[in-house]
Length: 394
Image (cartoon, rainbow, N blue to C red):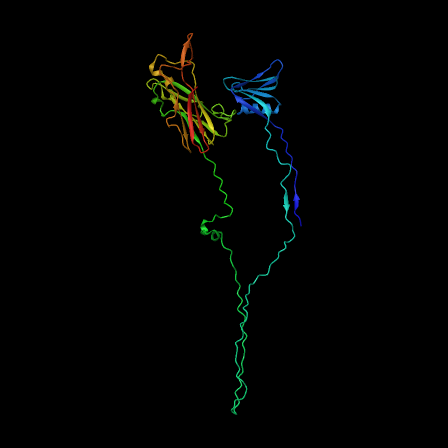
């Protein structure tokens, strides 16, 4: 009986939109001809940027702009003219079609139902090899003559019996075929096996994690070299990911490849405050440090950026004990699972005692462009979690 083929038809349709937003970008709009609407995300929403993104996708917009400072979400229906670079907490996104998924096959694999007819089996009778020996000739016996001798006594009669030889016993002989090794004249161990090779086990995924800290090599603020305030902020992005940032600014929308924290639950930066103990109480002194943990770093590149936070002015510029611009923190990155090309000393700002954070222009304090207060460290790891790092001032 022939097998029965069974198949099913399957169809899949995909018609979805996605919003690709980029940080530090602002959407440009033709305000004379374009149609747009500005919505303020309420303070009770813990993830305002995500809410803004969902509104844009649901309302049929062509682009969307989010201002993190004002929590304003701009829904753009027409008149979108692209993006421009801006500083601060703003993002612009363009609504595009989703990339089509891998097409679903239109028919299920053919299944053959085995025949229910019992197989026909022919059993051959065993072959027996019998060698029959030819009988040997009967022995020749000479019978004495019955002619009476000259004497009157008759000669005795002799009875001769001729024996027929029996057949040789039957012997069944099985001849084994010679092995391959014997044919070519080699020992059996030298002949390669023709059996199927055993599949290699699937290797376990490589664990590759980075422990990151922006802080100080001491716990007591009094160990700082100078009095005053010093604040810096750490942010991390993954190369190729234009959406997520691991930093204080996005505590409720962190990517799945990192965690972010601060030694001070209310802290927003890496912050050092050190004052003269003879004048001020210890409660005005503090050290807050930022902590980041990176998961799945194998085969990835991450950029760690440290930016100086500028206060309104340079406090006590004429007091040599208040050179707080020198109290710079250190960025340390530890590879928990592989080799690293960098030392454990970490990286810090390239500061000089004579180059402060501020200068006076027209009798007003402004940020000093010569102060090297920000830098970036780029870490690249291969598939075995062996990582390299590069440092640059920004």
